[in-house]
Image 1: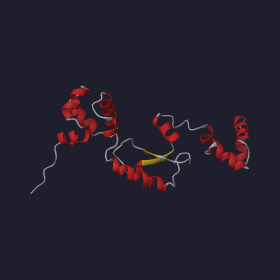
Image 2: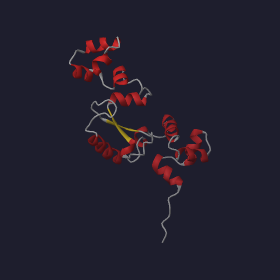
Image 3: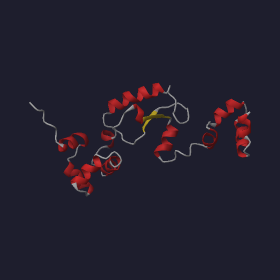
Image 4: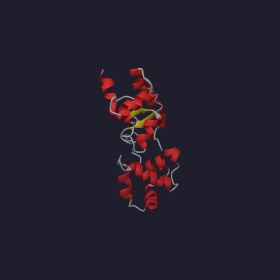
Length: 169
């Protein structure tokens, strides 16, 4: 006997707590557009944010589908990178979804980050990770340890573009 495939209506009701027709009404969109947006990994987050802001979907419930899988994958990812932020090397506590799809908990899609780097990515400031990291590929405190000089001296040398010469020797 062939098993019946669940309808998309029950899928959305089960996953988001709303029927497709209810979502379309709240958003002022056609049912087809809502369906297309929910199945598009790039457009889904915007649609869900709008439903959350309209207070039709509780944020905590639908932020991460399959949250138990994310929790397990997060621990595996942090263990693989030895608890270090993959951008700056600090202590990592957070995993970030690279593709922005909160349902894709693949290890290749997760980036282990410290709170500072995660905040920079989430606010669109990932290129503002600090002048030392951008220019030399090292944090100021790492340069201090490497050269055995004070952070004030590192700042002075950086300001007058003499730090590169010190790092090369």
